[in-house]
Image (cartoon, rainbow, N blue to C red):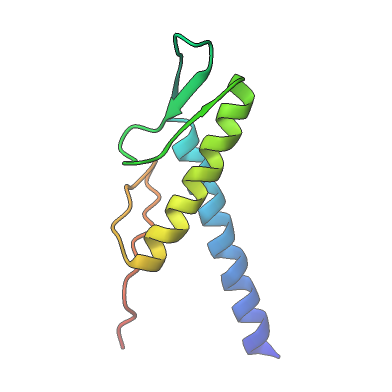
Length: 96
């Protein structure tokens, strides 16, 4: 029972860290209106994370979805992700 509670606590801690990371990264997002009237958004330092949509809100939502997928894929593949506002998602092997 104690092991289950410890695992649940750890899962909640990881989830909270991922949410903080995504929110912090989204604060770095920059947007512009393109010549066709659509909105383009990207996050500097996050290669390949960009979105284009008809409205600013749609662009923001799409950008967040792209970011979330990018983070998950990066973690699965063992890539080094940018540190954002002191949040470092680098996976390190346990010692001892």
